[in-house]
Length: 218
Image (cartoon, rainbow, N blue to C red; front, side, top):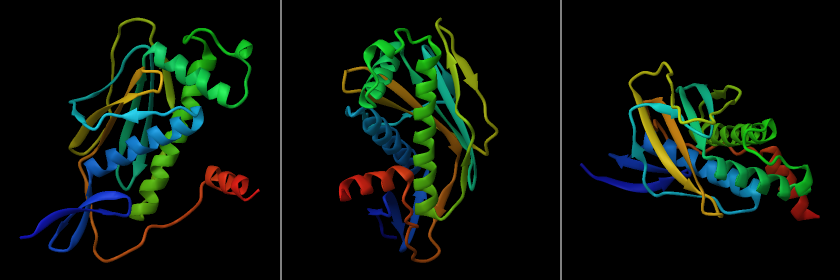
């Protein structure tokens, strides 16, 4: 039985007897790419992720700002992102600075609503990018909930449970250009997709893609 790896439609897929397969590892890699690309684009500062996925047994909201989004459809799951206060403020200020907002109009403390609202907006963009890529590549349907935010000024941990069929959990560490870190956790159904026939991914442009294309043409 011949088994080898190759890239297929943006995912790392396993070829076994000529059948193409996408599993949880491929999906979490797509999530990491969405997180890095959206935050890098929003802040104009490079965001990188560690090359290893940490196996965990549950998802947690931890200080200083915790965000989470649930998604349902062809498979279900939840994404959690935990930002230490230094990271939250770096991303918040870089994002607003990139939009041309003067420093005097920015929040000065991570507990202010403006900071958590901004991170919630970025979380919404991240999951939108992630679900769009998954849906286009695999010809499936994924719907997301509204992001939920929780500012945790003290050392507490809150376990978020989600009803999944034999869930798989993974955690990845991200690094900002300023040297700060944040953590992305994914809980999802233990699932895999195997191609029944050859197919091409759907190709649709997001509003951001259209705007960028228009700007380049001008």
